[in-house]
Image (cartoon, rainbow, N blue to C red; front, side, top):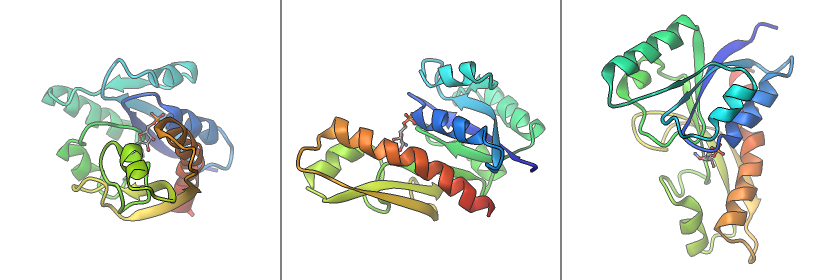
Amino acid sequence: MVKKKACVFISGAGSNLKALIKRSREYSFPINISCVISSTKKASGLSFAKIYKIPYYILNLDNQLNIESILIKLKEDNISLICLAGYMRILEKNFLDRFKGKIINIHPSLLPKYKGLNTFKRILKTKEKITGCTVHYVNKKLDTGRKILQKKIFITPNDNEKTLKYRVQQVEHKAYAEAIIRIYN
Ligand code: GRF
């Protein structure tokens, strides 16, 4: 099976990156993760790139030369899918233009509900009974692109921000891989 090449963008812990790397090592999974890009060298998720020996780059959005050189690398590597996984910066316009329709993101709510940050806090405050995650295409407007897949969980009266985040992330790790399979099927 010829796999497509993908790049994962992170800014933090990288639990979705780790889950995707593991799935991508399965023979029939449609993508290989060829590189990881982080918006900061402090992202602890970079440890997964190191452990699994995947090249990684730090993206400095304040430096146009750095942006260009990363765009060239992605082109040279023949990257056909960009997966944002906890990438906490607004993606530079050049990426959106050059990878139109090929950038996806995972968001910890059932979009269109709870776009943006502090999702779990807001969800608990409004006493929602159900939440979940959404994998969607990325466009110029934050968290509005076409949905690929959603997964739901029930919120229990005992949930707090920490437990809810943990439980949503457990389903995210499955949802992201399923969404990628759906894209290539
Ligand atoms: C995930 O919950 C994702 O929904 C959001 O950022 C979080 C990243 O977590 N966009 P991790 O870095 O993958 O652990």
